[in-house]
Length: 521
Image (cartoon, rainbow, N blue to C red; front, side, top):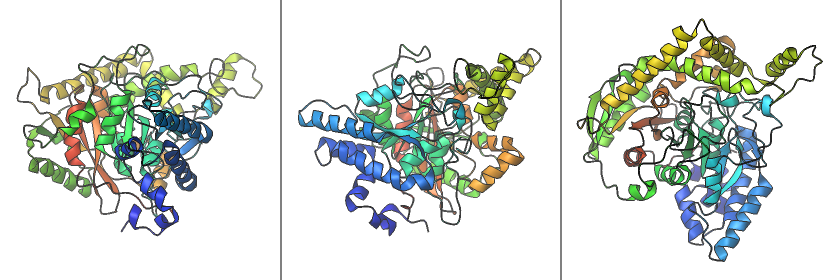
């Protein structure tokens, strides 16, 4: 049986005080700061010690800003002593995926192409976290330019799932695996990730966390290095649904620097609204038949059924629904996303941006070709080639345009089942598995990259439809598999209805009881 945080011999090697501090949720840490039971500096120091302990095992951070984070913690503690407002996060340590700009900090996207780039400004979501008292500990590992599902396509090497054992190493999920492991291994209280096709929800499911992808436009993309601009979404990892609500309150809102950000219909009060939830009476939960695919593991299939019945026991009504174009979403996504990547990554040519080859080149064309060949890894090159082909004159009508048409059909499916003025009998939320299985073995994933890397794309089959439609979705940890690995269930709601996700998710997470992986020896 996998050991727990408070039950391990290894935990005794962590000071009792550190174990107490690091096992708290973000909400608990924030409240402890406000009540004077700890200081921001104490939390940061405990986090830094845990990073030092776990980094050789999990490879979850690319860079750690020790001096900067300690200085910021000191400043917040001084403000608190003087009676100044310290924001909603009050000095809580946070980690950031390495495709978000953090001022005066390396932003590499886990790529040789950007290995020497220092961001001159903060991404909007990073700035909002800082303004509300979030302390940036460091930048986390990821699949290169966010292209991957396991965090194995990184110039820094793969990130290891903290639920691994001495016998088996498991993938962390991707592309935001480093951020997921940073939270799951108790080095921080929340983390930023980006979700283009499931890159937050998959790692959350694999590591036993809450992973939230907000509605497209709810959170600003300014300062997020672009992969697929119409799909990318700044997203969040947390230990609990309440923590996720707190973080979304902080980072959401219209941004004049991002033309795709949308003004919220009402002022965001996700945490406050969650406090008033007593039961799920009146909530209609849709169970899409198309997600019951043959590839589902027995554990996933059983827990999906159990999760639905658990929600029913708290007052929810279960409704069978159909999303008939779900099976087309994966194929369409892997045309649209690479096409947008082909365009976005064209700027990295060794002249304007990024790595430049040191070889002598006869022409600028040769220099650009060699620079991009050296700077980009195999998976990024693969997706650029696919995207460029899809956008070519001969293929545009047959591939890219058809994919856009399928995207519209996927969105129509969701609009047809969600409750609205036009459809008062619709459902409020959809419940599905997050992934077809729990985390796979690292050695198997690495072998697939050599034999048939496209097989790894199937991991995203449950998560991609929400990105195609732009709706909010959240993975909530539910139970452990027979192999003792976390299993998450996915909730999807109508556009800009994150409140319903939090409401239903707060009940769905109760059987989990914040289980944690073993503290490393």
